[in-house]
Image (cartoon, rainbow, N blue to C red; front, side, top):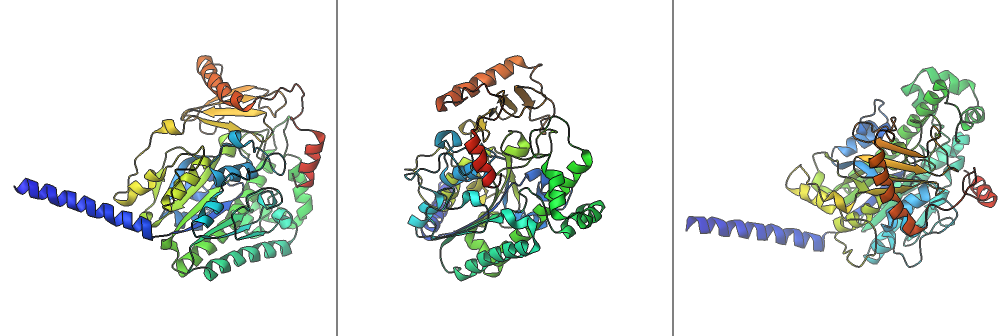
Length: 475
């Protein structure tokens, strides 16, 4: 009798909890604050273990957040990365693989902003990259307000830096103004994008040797010195120049971190932090770790495709949870919508809902893993459609066309991510059978989308007209 009574109480307690969370889901409407940072490598962030204190404000924010340590973009370029983030659709499916040209988001494809607007959200964006602005993408779909500041001229004058900071001060004012509304705010920072030119104080803090360099050389002269290396190289980069580039990049990350700190402090002061889901996201990485390519878009190493992802909601208050589960940027949209209690059953997307990783933390600090087979393998493509890769959770196989930028003239590469996460040791000769198996999987997948394109030229698979347009747009 006593056992039956205890069982009854247990069942009643479970039902009560279920009713509570069911009611909470119906009545609560968290805000969504998305802070994205262009060209941000997680391994250059102190919160991910970097030896320079580049992200003190994000470090503090992460103490109450989920930190994803294995997040990836399928393509390391801004517009296609955000197209995937905002729609949950792979670049292979959408055909969006570059900036400013080619396909854009289909008019019939719902975006995150459209979905939230239909669910009663006020939707406002403050974006500082022209390639995700209204003229060059459809990412403004669904936004009540879409503000664009073209930050490509930012690094040339101090007055531009001031205007840039004021632009995001306007975003902060908008948060305060709409604090009583259910809102989706997207803030996109451009600081770590090349060309790197942070205020000298940021650079001096990381390496005092460069204080004199920055005061003696003009901004334009310094950029010319570095610019010559931002292409496919036949010889290794000078170590001093490479170190200067990394230091400038780190200084720009520090500048972005300060703006993130201002936004988070505003959410705290307006008591919105615990009423919001706040996400920090990087669209892609940057070079530096291989001695022949130092920007992004053209290669598929972890330096380019591994991204930072930090999500905070009320269930994480008081502790940081690191999640090693593999996640792609196409998985973020269904995951966030589920966290916002918005039904996603009718959405036709490629991404997987991973909200169980977050919701399972309500009662404990250890999140359970979901079935990796839903996500792996991950397929990657570069912005010119000349490199492709497959990652099975441990091994990454990269296939390159002759007309791409080649590393040591190798058309095929294989890396053991468990023992060689920096992808320094190409083991394809020692593991030919494994490489062939991954190659077959890769080709079975990409052939469905018409890749690889047949082209026997020795240049990138782009017409002179396309190259000219890219240069006009700032690339």
